[in-house]
Every structure is written in structure tokens, then in C-alpha cells.
Length: 127
Image 1 (cartoon, one colour):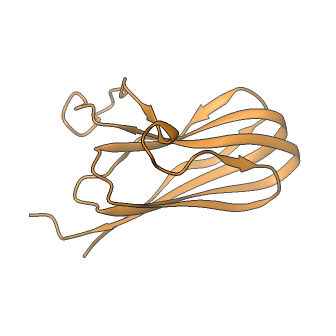
Image 2 (cartoon, helix red, strand yellow; image 1 turned 135 degrees about the vertical axis):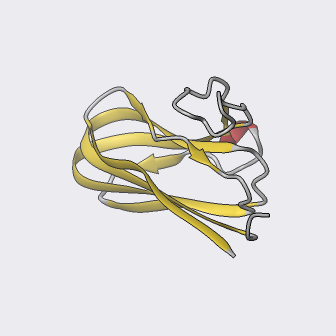
Image 3 (cartoon, helix red, strand yellow; image 1 turned 180 degrees about the vertical axis):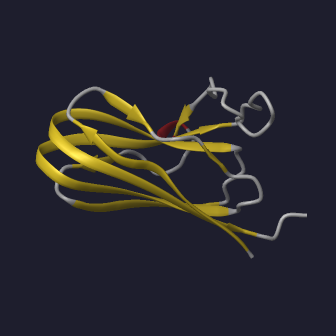
């Protein structure tokens, strides 16, 4: 069994605007979970969403090149946005992930907080 566990947004202090996590490659993973942890919040409000892509990337691995084409989870039949407010952790659990890349995109609406996003996936050993 292949397991891939990665921190894709580490200690990001959000007090406005939007932020996208690092791109996470899903090759050989059948399912995964993504957790968003809010800490040190002060009147915080935001919405987090999953985004998917099948772009190739310069080297097929994302190799320092921004992935250009993203689809919001709500447009793909997957779980919709997560509302973020209080300190704590919210999570998505996705089965049957057959796209190449995933990231979390957070849109701020009020206050401030520190965000961590961790992705964990499982699948068969790669061939």
C-alpha cells in the first residue's frame, strides 16, 4: 500500500485576500483526505474549496510550473466548500480520485487566522 502524507500549506497567516495551497500530485492514489486546520483565529471567516486539474505540467510532475486549469470541486460532483470560522480542523474525504492534481483554495471574508492544510492519500504500490 502506498501512502502519501504531505503538508501543503504550512502556517499561513491569513488576514485578507485568497490563498492556494501547494499543488499535490495524486499519481497512483485511489483516495485521499485533506484537512484544514484553523488556529489563532480572531473573528475569522473564510471558505475553503478543493480544486482539481489534469494538466500535464512541464515535466509531468508539476516541475516548478504553475498548473493553469483548475476545476472547483462543486463543479465535479465532489464535496462543496467548507466554511471556516472557529479554531479546529475540517476535512474532506475523497474516494475514487482519477484526476492528476489537487489543491485547496481559501477565500477570506473576515478577521485573521493561521492555516495549515495536510493531505493524506492511499493507493496500490506504484508499478
